[in-house]
Length: 374
Ligand code: AMP
Image (cartoon, rainbow, N blue to C red):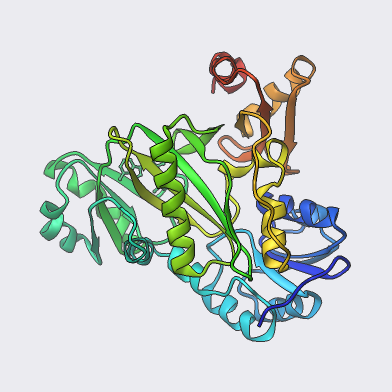
């Protein structure tokens, strides 16, 4: 079933975080109404929504209520209840379906899927328990990274293992779920490709972002990524292959490692708009959020174009005051704050996008800035 959703109709969003908020803001520009399902009252998306349903994500009555008020339903994060979403696909229009969520909620399924779509991943083993890890670790060797199959994010639920002496450190991870152990990839850069596809099968990738992490959290995205044409081609081809294999509808962020020889290895997938695509709000002729709304509403997609090289820098809790105090110094920075009340350390509170004619200078300016010193 394929539908076109028109302005005036209601888009339901599961999840009330900043990604939902930026989706909602994009949709409202074209006159859509927004309903959001989210457990807390004053969420970033709730603040800009027309209808708020405040309940846990797996609350059946709440999901039915969302289905009732929405003409199309999307989601802004992947750890929603699969069974709840599956039920929702039966009573509401959810063009993205539920299967991609099931795959990306489980690193083992995700790796199988990436391999099946004929894209490169790091050598890995899947282990149901610690004993299986000990028995099979030689197949990946050292150093390696043990990651919980379910529920990890921003480097949580991961343990780097340098030798057999460290293995015991991975034991607590199995209290959460099965794990994968993957070979350490000696990457020179991390990049991401955001690929978007509509119900008609039109597919576009946003310009490739180069991602710099600090303490496992995305710190900045540099666009265009400083990679050669061959690597860029490999990256786009891989993202499109996966999107095609999955018959994607909506948005998929594909995180990749770039190796010394310019080839790529896929790290992981996120079935939604991604932090590394926020730059597109100002720096492209179509933002990842506008394109996502177009994709799920059955509208034609626009071919993305980068207006200017750009750097996106995250504002974590500890950066809010320094950024606010520096506002008057940087009229060219586009400041986004997500409306979160508590500026906790390392919590994503907002971001800035800086469009620049001199990428190297801007990167240096950010590196030297006291704002991001902590
Ligand atoms: P993830 O949660 O899988 O995105 O991992 C978080 C970060 O850990 C990545 O962005 C990398 O910087 C690092 N990392 C993850 N897996 C590997 C790997 N196999 N080899 C080297 N670094 C990795």
